[in-house]
Image 1 (cartoon, each protein chain N blue to C red):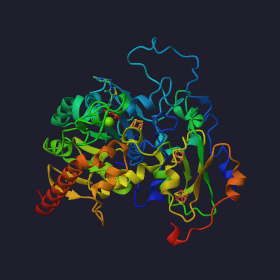
Image 2: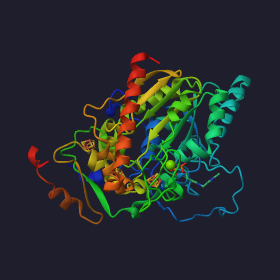
Image 3: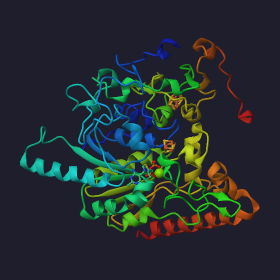
Length: 156
Length: 317
Ligand SMILES: Cc1ncc(C[n+]2csc(CCOP(=O)(O)OP(=O)(O)O)c2C)c(N)n1
Ligand code: SF4
Ligand code: SF4
Ligand code: SF4
Ligand SMILES: [Mg+2]
């Protein structure tokens, strides 16, 4: 499959990951903020957010969804759809909300928010694994071509 | 109330996350796994507050917030106070009919680290429990003051090295045993109290849902493995948590109405605690010959506690 599904823009809202975390935009300085300040996570009505997927939401610039921590990574998980059984282990244990699942299917990785911890790889139960860590700058096609064969029981 | 289906993980994964990425918790931190589970357990509106600690400072890095629900940034010790104040306000406004949507269900949850829960916010928490508000308090127990550099707390187990209880030639690390917060909270007469672990995602989700559904003050202690201060590789957070629950260092259980104790996870093969300790840098010094007695002590305490839990479960007390 589908190298396309691992595209950076996978199910991204237009404003996913558009700021570096440290980049300030035109805001009050930390020493100008007064007690009781409110940061709105969304533009407009946010009452039904639990029933909206991220691509349907109107995130405000204050929502960290619009920021990226991609620069934290030195290694990245690569996803191989051919082996995946959609168990959702990677989804439930990713600490950075970076596994994109829709309708019970694992689709890929949100590389704007993934920090490269490697937990998703550890908890993936398939043999060989459907997620593996590669160097941050490794090529997707080459990574998939290098995928290991199924391991025999005793080698595990 | 609208709890979401947790029949299986596929079902659970159809929830739309309300906790966003690009927070600044360390890679591999268990705090956010626990928070995500809580927020995916229900589609009700949530009013959340967090005591100061890693979770709070990392999810509200000005000008960003990682929370898609109402979330209150408050002092180190008083998330329980802030969230129970909100709960009272909500009740009153509902009675007066002055809410925008008077029927929308809302749940109130406070998060605290072990430092703020076991030590510095203890009286605020105790007060909120005693006043009997309808809220849930979740402690993210990583057994140290992680956000300020790993000082010992009353949740730190005996034998662990911390920045203020360091192991060295004259010390094996912390000398005192961990405070039994679950029993203390059950003794408040709380209708639901539990200790849960993120590796056992289903019992954790069920426990969270029970706490949210139960009227009155509920308390949950969660095991939150901290790769930075426990000193293990971030990829191993779930593996370490498995060792914690399988060695019974962190038994998974609930106490209903102050009695009725149920064990929620019974390991098939109970692991010697050595394996759990050996996997973390903070316990490495215990494997020197002169410190072996500390491992023996930890093991015998675990055995006694597990025996007590089993007897209480059987006796329904
Ligand atoms: C009254 C008060 N005392 C001390 C601090 C400094 N402080 C901020 S975070 C923190 C550690 C929090 O530890 P814990 O509650 O265990 O949360 P963790 O960071 O481990 O998740 C401390 C001591 C403070 N902010 N306020
Ligand atoms: S490497 Fe870590 S942050 Fe990235 S997707 Fe996997 S579990 Fe999530
Ligand atoms: S853990 Fe592995 S098999 Fe399961 S959904 Fe993720 S990639 Fe697929
Ligand atoms: S120090 Fe520990 S608790 Fe704090 S963010 Fe890092 S891993 Fe999480
Ligand atoms: Mg702590």
